[in-house]
Image (tube, rainbow, N blue to C red; front, top):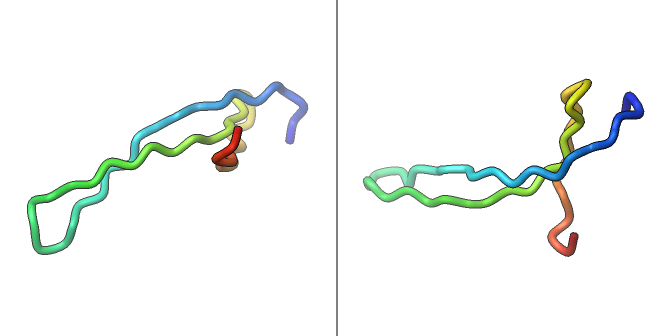
Length: 46
C-alpha cells in the first residue's frame, strides 16, 4: 500500500482441538509490508 516491497513470510498457526489435548499446526504464507504492517494471505500456487 505504501510502495515498499512486500516480503513473503511463512508462519505457523497452532490450534487446540476443543475437549482434547490435541493441537494442530498449520503453516500460513503471507505477504507482509515491513513499513506499514499491511499484509495479505499468499496464494497456494506461489
